Image (cartoon, rainbow, N blue to C red):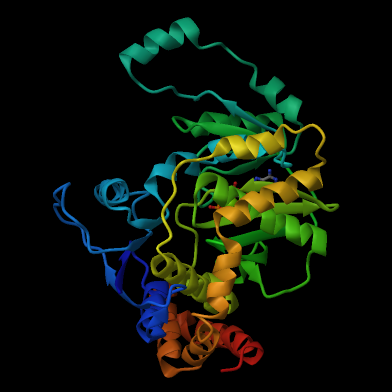
Length: 409
Ligand SMILES: Nc1ncnc2c1ncn2[C@@H]1O[C@H](COP(=O)(O)OP(=O)(O)OP(=O)(O)O)[C@@H](O)[C@H]1O
Ligand SMILES: [Mg+2]
């Protein structure tokens, strides 16, 4: 059987090239029932489509539709009518704003910092709204809200990304200035997790999760530290569980999750990214891992005929959340069981060990090849000004060499 994987892309070139190269080298894959499967990739183009057209794709990796509506509607069509498997489904975008994810994870008992949603500073300019606002918009005391949370706190958009509109606030004057500047953007006020021991950012693809130590104060190419063993086993497992739980709960396949760990307590603060950063220049050492995960999970989905599932199944999670006799670690273990079950972790591992047993060597060989180095050099040239090319090529080559020493071809 032949399977076509579509890439719906914005401006990225690095990981698509990597992924396309690896898929082209993958060769025939044997399914659990003994049938033989081949995989091909194609880049999705934007053009008129009849709603009754049948797409050629089995699976689409989407990096565009969060922002661009024509392909978003095409994705909805192929999901509803043709069972195309999506990383991620646009039907889950509504919860990709932070707000819904905070609510759900609070309900599940996770240690999400206290958070308040305040009304718009400048409400939508609309005559009907003016009428409503006059009658129903309650005046409120912003200082009292902030005092209830305590300083310092964070003000950030309820649906934000890329730090746009995020500010750390230490007093009332800053609070009012930030709120006045928020204009027509809807804002959360959130307690700050001060003095955390570790900032973790985990990247997940289906059942695969890499927990990385993140340093938000550094420039992008240095934010992911190459460090292992920065969490004890319990906290490490909790971060993995939370990442998988969030994804299983919302039916996200490809996402990143940020948790702040302080005194052994894991506080998730940001875990809804329709389009997580997988740039070679951000992930560097972890880039081969990310490409391997993407390759293996997408191959597993198309070869085993995994069916997309959009029904949220929230009741099973809430039943655990509401079970008074369960402690927090017991609840986490139950959530993990549901999440592992959703991502069919055991079947996936088995598939990786048998049908995809050749993948680690294939990736290692490719990372050692001139083709990979050309990708690295092209990506640096496309990302940084000419004066910095040599420095960054050397920097990323060094990190990739480290990965190669640990993963010999
Ligand atoms: N409650 C909090 N406690 C401590 N630090 C926080 C908190 N909320 C946000 N921050 C800091 O502010 C940064 C940006 O916040 P957040 O991740 O919520 O916004 P974002 O716009 O989604 O950013 P990005 O897209 O880079 O993830 C975080 O990386 C963290 O350094
Ligand atoms: Mg963030």
